[in-house]
Image (cartoon, rainbow, N blue to C red):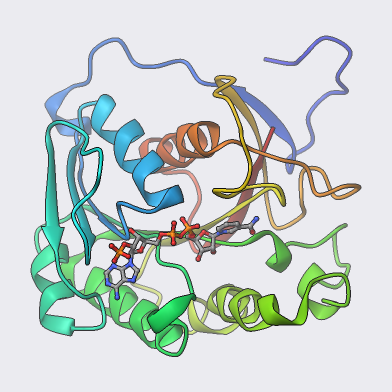
Length: 243
Ligand SMILES: NC(=O)c1ccc[n+]([C@@H]2O[C@H](COP(=O)([O-])OP(=O)(O)OC[C@H]3O[C@@H](n4cnc5c(N)ncnc54)[C@H](OP(=O)(O)O)[C@@H]3O)[C@@H](O)[C@H]2O)c1
């Protein structure tokens, strides 16, 4: 469906208005493990997926302040492979929603590599919460991350670690791993107040709104994210979601 006045969508720029399935067949219900399922992005994905009837396990070190009903919350450290293994075993889908901040800053890539290896071994599809800076402003153009001069230096390590997942680590995984790296618009995060509009635009590795970076609320990012899980139509690919 197109917004009034919008130009027809190209392959990299589709406006999707979410239309929830009225009843979900049992075969469409997935067991989804969200690593970092109590964070900004992770908790929105957990909430959206649980509301659609999927079976959710959320792993984090601390218990959530406002748990979502029908979600299994597991407390543990994702840097411990045994903890990850027990959360990922039996999952159909694994969502990686960790952030390269705080104590995890130095082990973020290693932890995500372990998540990818365990998801592959479990035969689970992997969906990674990505960053805006790894997107391109236009087809074939350098990714934003190649010039971070507009970002404060203290954010560079976090941005670079996140981008390394899509630039190096995910493409290096065995072909048996089915992954999707889902970048948000630039204005996304706990500092952004965003309401649920019930729609989003989906792009590939080219930002849907490269002029100013665009924005997306956690709720609409989660809407698009869970649609990607359910539609299962992107494989070993980067996509992005914006309003
Ligand atoms: N505009 C952008 O590009 C943009 C903006 C924001 C975020 N992002 C992306 O979104 C991703 C997630 O960011 P976020 O803001 O949602 O992060 P967040 O709110 O800090 O959430 C991180 C989650 O990971 C958990 N966690 C942290 N360390 C852990 C550990 N060692 N073991 C288990 N769980 C752990 C946290 O819970 P505990 O602390 O209780 O363990 C929390 O559930 C980032 O990597 C980034 O790629 C992109």
